[in-house]
Image (cartoon, rainbow, N blue to C red; front, side, top):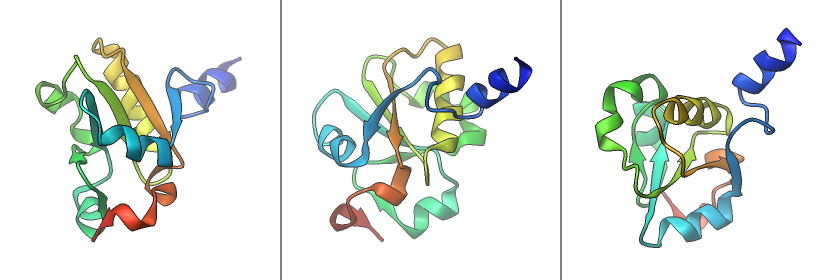
Length: 116
């Protein structure tokens, strides 16, 4: 039982977040009412990013909650989907309910819309 809890806390897809594909997330991020949160490191974000993404690295989430709107749908992305699941767990602890993990992360993001 302890292993199952550990796996869910650290990003098993059956954890608490709604999954959304990268192509759909790109489309949603262009609409009003959606906030694209990139939780990769500043260095990763500087090397390439999605248009409209706001970078708040995972280790800074709790200190920067005031920058993350509670009234919008949050699309949370990282490199592959692991750190974004961790970020969603933190956000949910602080009352964020409208969270969506971008399945596959930036590795699956449509290449034509990546800014380098």
